[in-house]
Length: 87
Picture 1 (cartoon, rainbow, N blue to C red):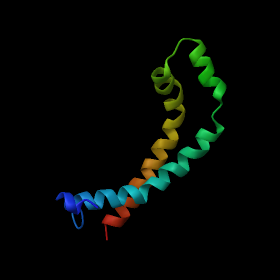
Picture 2: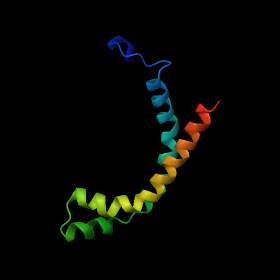
Picture 3: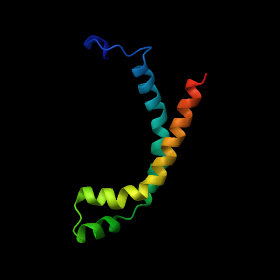
Picture 4: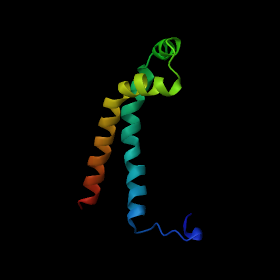
């Protein structure tokens, strides 16, 4: 895919990074998805009614609620990556 453009991916650090990203991404999705499903849209509406724009709503309302799930997902993905590279 990238070889015609002159970018060598196979058997390089970039290739390993891409592979570990795709392997670890499901860990992050599986931890964040339940939090997003339980998220009450009224909280976003309350932030908007108080004058927050979309970026402020994301940064001050949504991200703090997602942070524990994101941290867990990234930790699981990192542990999986370490287990793969330690062999």
